[in-house]
Figure 1 (cartoon, rainbow, N blue to C red):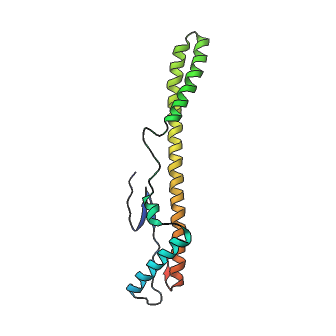
Figure 2: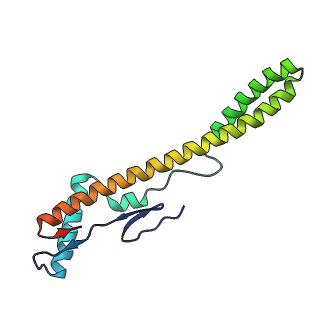
Figure 3: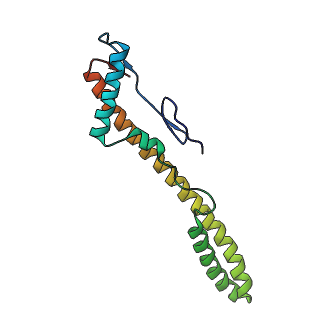
Length: 149
């Protein structure tokens, strides 16, 4: 997953576009920059959300180390079930081996599902935080005479 900052914050593949403020009362560019900075600080202190910190938040861990527990537990459950079935058929060892392989695959699928859910949850939390921050920033800018979209 790539991450970069573009016109606001890019976290993973979700872009948090910063609202645009139009100087509705003829404010100069210099005044607008001052107002944007003041509103950024005000929104940060009033929401407790720092967009720079949100952008720097790493995505949930991924890779082969994630889900090791699910695969291991799946293998153990599969081996136990396979051994029981294998004992009935006359070869508990072979049944346990087959069950362990199947259980590992099921555990791996569970790990991938958990990893995807964690990533989606992280993106939703990030989006919610940035939406809250930008609503506060927009309210401040509106209060200073800007049209915000």
